[in-house]
Image 1: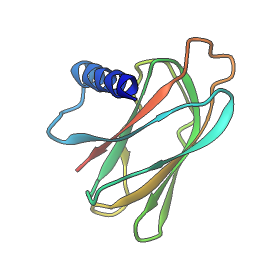
Image 2 (image 1 turned 180 degrees about the vertical axis):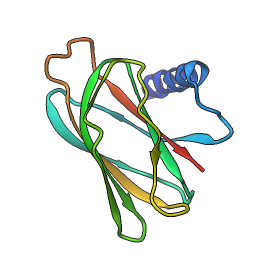
Image 3 (image 1 turned 90 degrees about the vertical axis):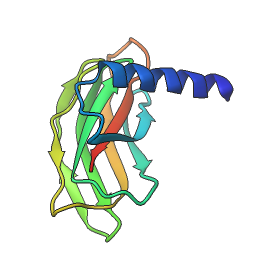
Image 4 (image 1 turned 60 degrees about the horizontal axis):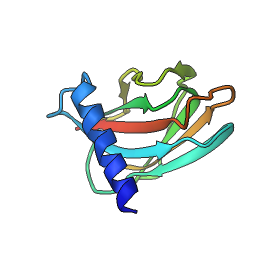
Length: 129
């Protein structure tokens, strides 16, 4: 377990040092490791923070993101059709959330990693306050 915590810490430090984000505005709200093939994953967002926008960064390997759904604490859902083939280290566009600011309950991803042989991709989700 300590090995995974160390690897995750190194990954986060690397992402923050190479990222073009303004650290004061963007916060890492979660991370998911992509399984091989077509899959749907759920990222539960912890905490009581309010966000105005999201941004993704794919690290360690490539990933074909098909779409994403954002579920808010009030029960509403926002469908985000990404349809983007991410290369390792690539970031998504800024995804503005509807309304002034929202509390996020969970985010679901639909992706495909078929044909990608360079290890497992990790999806890091950033939230802007």
